[in-house]
Image 1 (cartoon, helix red, strand yellow):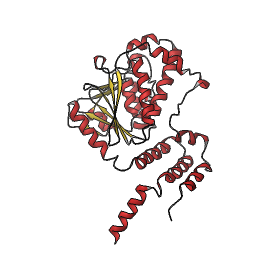
Image 2 (spheres, rainbow, N blue to C red):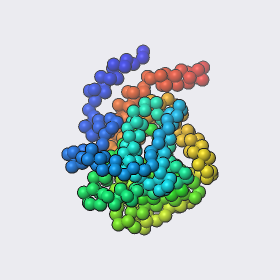
Image 3 (cartoon, rainbow, N blue to C red):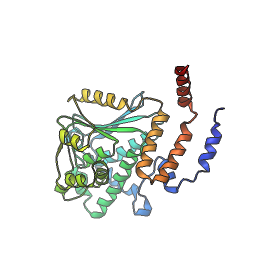
Image 4 (spheres, rainbow, N blue to C red):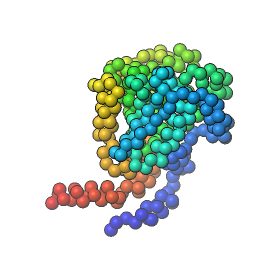
Length: 307
């Protein structure tokens, strides 16, 4: 007897998930709003005054997205407009139901040098800094929570805010000549896009403190030994690196979108929620795939093998 869809829906409605868990389950959730003193529209008007570059998104038929930071004349630094476009592209990815994976990269063999100094100089007060911090933390948290398996493709240098962006991805791949460096100490600040907290999760507190307080340049070998990156790529040219990244990501995105997306959501809940809440979330995710087309097909296939 096949499970009835309305039964799974009723179980979801009557679940005892906490408010926090339900919010995590939704797409489009931001960390900050007006209750935190964050007025997004006011900041957007300010950021619009600093044009330059673009954030480009290519969605491929195989369910892989390519997000490109494109401002090569400034080492792909984020202009104000690029910060706005990054949010727009994340929202587009939140609504891409056929998506399974995402590659985040920079144009012209460079990842990103962080914030464009023109915007930084204009947003010079502590209040401006905190508002921009809330905006970028909102955006990169939503990027991190996407039900897509994401990988940062680090060619050339990922500096400051660029280094922080890499930590919002599930994985990182690096070229032999690449470098990751959190230069915030040298700028008299701390990471403000969520990169400090995510770095602790990636490396542990001791190593994260060394990397941040020492402003340590992480070449490919050092990043690999610390566990910051998964692999060092063999290619060095733009096309070759992208091809390698596609192949690497492909081993984790085989299968129907609903299954890959549910797996990513399961891991996200395990990372962000307490055990009891994460277990409840897992139960809800089971209801979205158990008895579904992929599950029935796999059972039928196994049955044939067992005859």
